[in-house]
Image 1 (cartoon, one colour):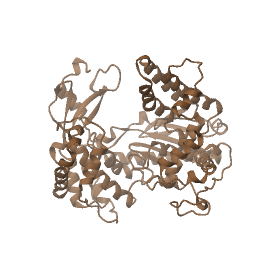
Image 2: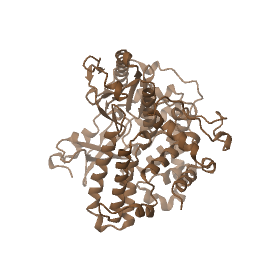
Image 3: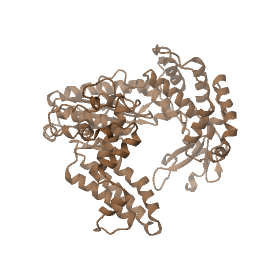
Image 4: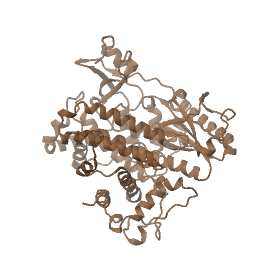
Amino acid sequence: MLPLVLKSTTPLSTHLGDVKGYRTKTGETSTLPKSDNPAFIFSQITDSDVKKSIVEINSDAISTDCISRKMIIPIVDILTPVIKSIFNYSISSGNFPSSWKEPQITPIPKKANPSSFSDYRPISIIPFLSKVFERIVHRQLSIYLSRWSLFNSFQSGFRVGHSTTTALVKITEDIRLSMDKQHVTVLTLLDFSNAFNNVDFDLLLAILASLNISPEVIDWFHSYLFGPRQRTRVDDSFSNWCTINAGVPQGGVLSPLLFSIFISSITLQLSSRYHLYADDLQVYEHAKLMDLPNTIGLLNKDLDLIVDWCKSHGLKVNPSKTKAIIIGSQKLVNLIDFSSLPGIIFDGTPVPYSDTVKNLGVTFDKFLSWAPQISEVSRRMFASVGSLRRLSNFLPIPTKIALAQSLLLPILDYADTCYLNLNEEMLNKLERIQNLCIRFIFGLRKYDHVSEYREKLKWLPIRLRRNTHILSLLYCILFNPTSPTYLKERFEFLGDTHCRSLRSDKNLTLKIPSHNTSFYSKSFSVEAVRLWNSLPLHIRSAQSIDKFKKLVKAHFFPP
């Protein structure tokens, strides 16, 4: 509920749709190099394309078109040919229907007691048929970009087979390998202000053209991007329409993909290592202790290049929310004299070195010990269980199981494959957290034994649960063609380094990566290989990820 002072819908809508351009015009639109791959043109949309996209949408939210999934599904066979014809006419004429560029905005408070417009986050609900159409276009464009390797190799956002987990595994593996070589890592986590809302349309279209997107498709994207309007709904009141002049459409299915394309070139001139997840950019480099000042200097030069890129592309950096940390073994980090060490400078602002940073939802500390991460998981789990426990007496067990699986276990499981070097105390703490979920489900007291109840749920003990996640991720890396190359290249089969699609004893044993320290032996690259090689051949030979998961769970938890 909005405070009375904020209930004037039109000023609120104007604020939520306010986009400030930051771009310094430098003429890049005429100088972008053009890819030499075949041109992208739209394929004719089929009935099956339309049905597939409708089925994939799981929201029944209604926007300004007053159409919902619930209305379409019962008569989908009748409507599909009509919808298909509309879509095909749109791509052939280069015109995106203007009524589908009119989302409805619902303001959601960012904090408990909002007092100004800036305390609200806009949730955009786009017209249903626009969602269906954009999914089809997204699929066609993504296939083209993947086929011709036009994605940034280290962009993990909104790509099939990529995720925050794969990004975090990549980064932590790099840091661990550095520590195995007695190096430290300087990591900077950069922040941008409202990046999605400040995409320059003209420059985005020029970037698409440089990827050899055909002129006809460029015309369609021009129609899609230009001229959108939005209105804000508060209770039963609606604002006037507000025109949007920049930024990829809020809530649009195509928006994350278009933003990934737009920001891709931000890293082209960098000499440091980097990783992108949508607008989350981290830049890092490894160094011997004696070379650390020089490495920081080189990193600062790369940060200057990023600032220059942002100025020419209309994105605004946010130095006050940018973080920096130096990660290494306790022995090496404790030898660093931070008082005399050169600082990280981002857009003229010093960025202090932190002891911990939040990276894509996971807390990194300067020794990569994961103690703060385990504490954060514990805090969130106890808070969540505490909230749910108030309803415990009124809920049947099946409902509590569903709540635990949808709200609690994701906290416990999130990105757990990136932090494997846990000591026994930490693993026991995670076990107690899982037991907390079991006690909530069955209404058990604090000291009641949970083993028999865990077996009823078919849940594995925490160590085995984490092992199943490691193995499942490894299976996808090895056999899913869309999984990240930056992880595939870390693994090699004995006797066959080229063909990973075959299922034979010859090529289903992996080489254990060479390493120097026991610390690196707990890395994903080593631990995953050891677990994989210990599996019976019939499990490693599974023909699908679902079958593999089922066999692994049965292996760890026999009936």
